[in-house]
Length: 496
Image 1: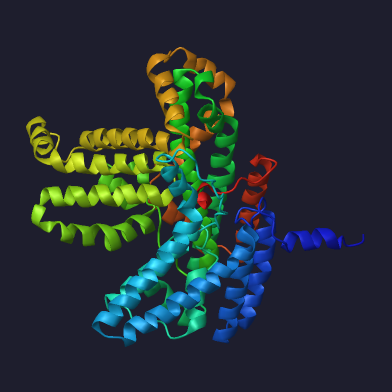
Image 2: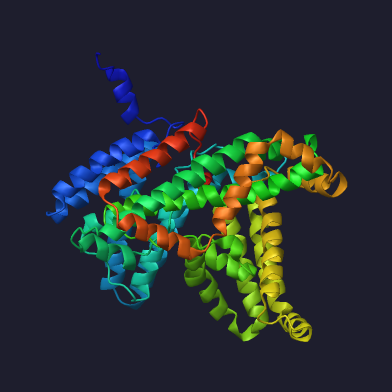
């Protein structure tokens, strides 16, 4: 059978509607060959670094076309700026640092917020300015935050600048976390670039389990309930009953978790096969017993970044105000967290809600603790369950504004839930959406399984040979292929 070179070229060409996704068959096929090349070149450090840089640039090119050149620009700017900061004194050092951070933020701001700010200006003008419709390169928020954390660490003298340009380029552009994190720190990533390649059997087994977990979360659960239920309700909430709207909210809570943590699982898994340990990004967030606990478990790389580089400096700035200084720092941090997620008032309000939750928790800490003591709930399982249920409801309520295309849609959804809620419809819903209900139950059950079961699974895989690993992985890939939609759905966090 003759080779169709046009189709072959198309596989490697840029198509904005067809990025290279971890969950795609083409990525798995291609990554297999990259692994072989990487293993062959691993004894020569510069060769294995060049292989990863080349693949990372290609990986990003498949999602954003020629905007992969932004990675080259970011590498040059941050490499030279960090050296300038390290080799300069006082005023000049500060000027280089501020200028470098400003350049990173200006590039991010241009691509992500230009139209948002134009629309704000238009609110105060009679003649409206034309929106530019700037292309948003995927992952620009993530690698910009990586670059800024690197500059800040050098400026704070907790990290010396990287003198090998290729190593820093790999840190900025590494394909494993370039599109949707985790936002790894240079202090953790760069030493791994310099180490010899090593992959233990346990690490291999962990990687296989993570890839399987990611496929199930993303393709089997998130994509299916999204296309077959959640998207329909959020796009037209007034067409559905209050029961269906409420279940769609809980469905979206599960979808965004499975989608994003599924991506993270696969990112950590494929990176681990190359000998790179990316930081943990999720720790069963819906087990949280408070909003603060939720943010210690959800998108950990972002929440820790915001805590280290934004909240704590603001906390120090407002320390004279004590409790109210903490509240101001929290509100600013979460408002900017919302803005980081997207140039929309709904994202900003989502961030404000979480800031408000945290502030309210601080203001009511004493009376709540008094009630807990009086009722004898302190240290009981009942208290953990009550706190967990309340936290989940608050988080799910906030997700409405995160997902809804506008406040009007969010209002329609809330109106349906509180005005047209008829419990008897639930049995009809089960009959109409049996697969959706089954997958939602499965998704939440998987989320609440004990950590010990995961460790037991890794132990089981560790004691099996590579053929067993291959068969198990192939079975789960086949299952994912049977369930997946005709078109692979992009990961939700690619838009941020």
